[in-house]
Length: 103
Image (cartoon, rainbow, N blue to C red; front, side, top):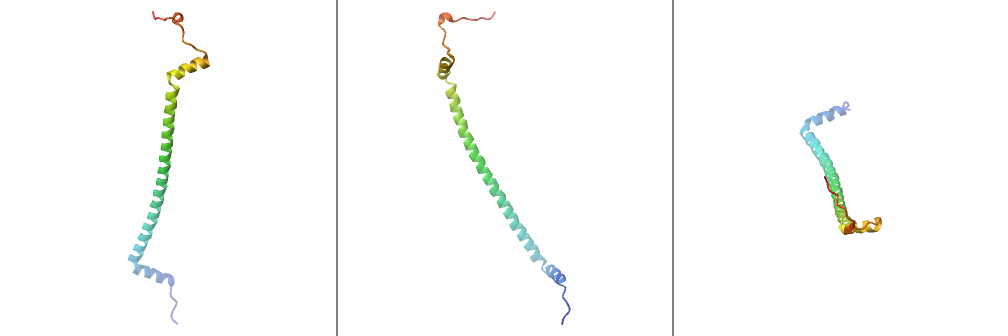
């Protein structure tokens, strides 16, 4: 019966004998993990970009609606009608107008 073999020593010697293969294996695994991390980051950024573009579209539509509403509310005839109907205001007759001058 042969002597006992030290398994740890044999593995260490085998790794040293095949150090290039070990190095290439580690580089390949590192590269694969890096590809996974970068791909996940890219997907996450693409998703965030799409959400931001949708938000921009929503805000653009809201802005256009607000501009339309502002132009409608600022229309002279609308303001005049609101002053007449809600506040009971009316345009004074020319005889009732008073001119204020500066001295």
